[in-house]
Image (cartoon, rainbow, N blue to C red):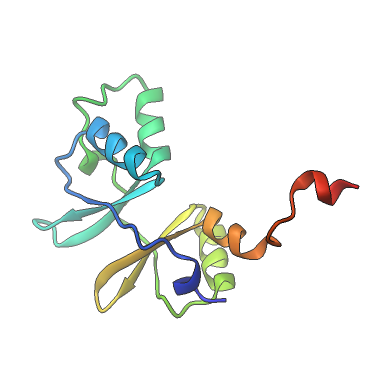
Length: 133
């Protein structure tokens, strides 16, 4: 199975000046765990994850004052829609992260997460209680 088959095509794109609270509200409304941060001044894409927001709040930082650009990961590994899920999982494991921005023709077309990969690999309709006995 390929990344294009598993990825979410709901891509939230925010700017680096969004506050963490604004980013969190937008992510929660869409039920997603990451946002693409587009910094047109710096000319690049980054990613802000729920973990980045959680870390900031855990440090006692004010989510109404902290901006996405300060907490964005800019050293991003991108996936191609044609990657296999194994390639995506290997990149995530090697890099220690849970989301990959999927690029096609130099633009984001999706995000693939560990959850997306597990959903594809887990047998449909089987619940943990069913597997135990």
